[in-house]
Image (cartoon, rainbow, N blue to C red):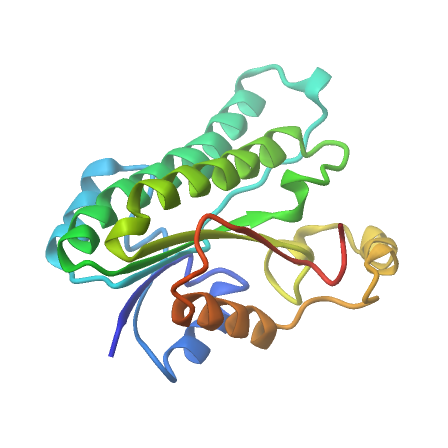
Length: 216
């Protein structure tokens, strides 16, 4: 049975995804209280002491603000947190999981991006930029490791029934749903099915897979 390290397992999507993954895989669910993804030493120790076949990184942080309003200590602290978790956290996880994967000639790395990487909306500039980094980083990691049977792909998530969707003010959520071609939120089973497919299909690598109900 393959072992998955699921980062962000206590979040709105992660907590729903965890029991589905456990029906087929050995899953180590990790929250920010278990491991600080921005701390290289902590991430390194985790991968040194655990044999991980598959990494799914759902950890992330969002703070919406217009670009011209980015000023002041409190706001800049939030911006730093976004960059640390979304970019440096991703780098720490990927760089530390690869050594053992390369030794065992197998690995699956699935990074969670967002449709906002290609379709930003107002006030999401920093978050969208971070997710754009994830998509680009995915492609390079895939190229570097394809000959070791290690796949790296990203999921450009749309709006799902859980997670950050419910941090959107309620009065905007209906408008967003009406602008989704499928006219509904994504289901957690659809996210699970996509992740399982990416794990099982070794010929898919370096892809930014849009799972958004038709947002293109």
